Length: 98
Image 1: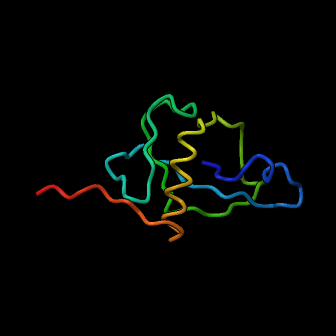
Image 2: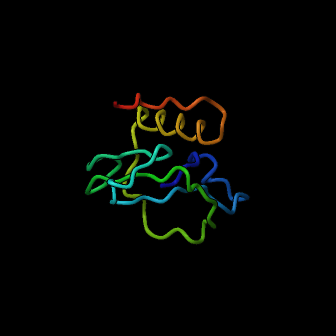
């Protein structure tokens, strides 16, 4: 998943884009990840975005066209997880069951 804005992506002097890998192994979702349901962003099946594995890649490594775009609500959730992963905000964990 590309995490940068379209403004940054279109900037010819930026040779890299920030990405996070996707996985269909939703059983491996961790606190640093985000769950996407089938249909969101053009995905054909449920997936997780590994937001703890954000990395830069060269723009030249990108192949094909984008399969979709997430809505503002999903991107706000992703932004919050990224901010928590960077320690910019506190991570809110679900209560532990007894």
